[in-house]
Amino acid sequence: MGMLFLALGFMALFSPGDGREPPAPEALGGYDIPFLDEFDRAMPLWNWGKTQGRGFHSLDRRASRARIGIAGPAAAREESDCSLEEARPSRKLGRVDFRLRCQREDGGDFNGTLGWGVWRPGPPDALDAAWFLYCSRGSDPAVRGFSAMVVENGRPVFSKPLDVDFTAWHEYGVEVAPGGVTFHVDGVPVARTPRLPGNAPRAVVLWMDNKRILQQKGRWIAGWENVPSGQYMNMDRVEYRSAKKARP
Image (cartoon, rainbow, N blue to C red):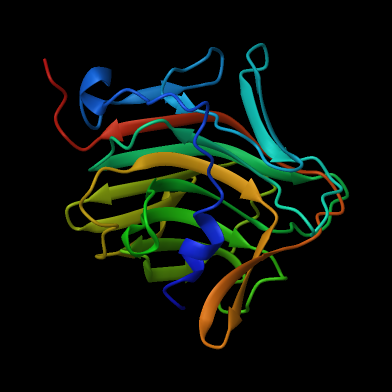
């Protein structure tokens, strides 16, 4: 893998929201504060951000379910993306679990990229992340498919392909500990690495877009691709648990 595809492919995925400065972690109670969101109410920690192109997001409190996605068809001539992310990085050591499934209206393969985990946004050489990642068939074979990945200072330092049907409901866990990162699917560890996604605070994030990741003269670049049919990510639970002892 190259060091630039994450920066070029993902840095434009997430938009800044409504322009207001989100509260600092201290104002929210500090770092690594546990939370459980079953999407039956609005949670102030999330920044739904802006969508681009055919991207959208929704919250159905009655059904206790949130959805992000791309309302197809989306053309390759423009960027379409959406995300659900924490307003301010405040995660250091702990575990985040997602219960979700992805859908494609026509039952075909997904286009673009999608994923979920924790990340620290920033300049290309400062991007840190530990997440589950999917890149479509339109992307370079080196990054194509579904994998567990750790990124440090803009460099993918760990990647393991996973044979998981993410169109079915599963629970995915990303656990960041002093000794490394462990990825779980339905409570079972599926990948481990001693590599860590940097030392700075991270934020929980989920996204979907119409990007494809390509190599050009040894560099990783991002292009757009058609999304002929609507594709969505449905989630009904996100929980974060700190590795620290709970305060009395």
